[in-house]
Image (cartoon, rainbow, N blue to C red):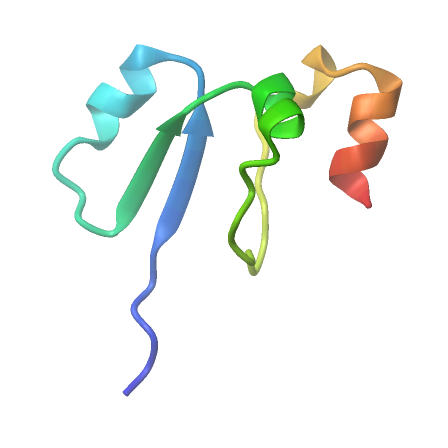
Length: 68
């Protein structure tokens, strides 16, 4: 049986969480890129990562961490 498709959303805003309520296959984590780096909370393997309208908030060094 194929593995169930699921998505993990990392977002700092409340509106994103409210829009995704009710989806059973979405795990929502209210956090920022900086908090992800500081707390090392990426505890999963991901097949791919999509970022929209967020990467420009990171410093050059922070961008290097996410792209490695």
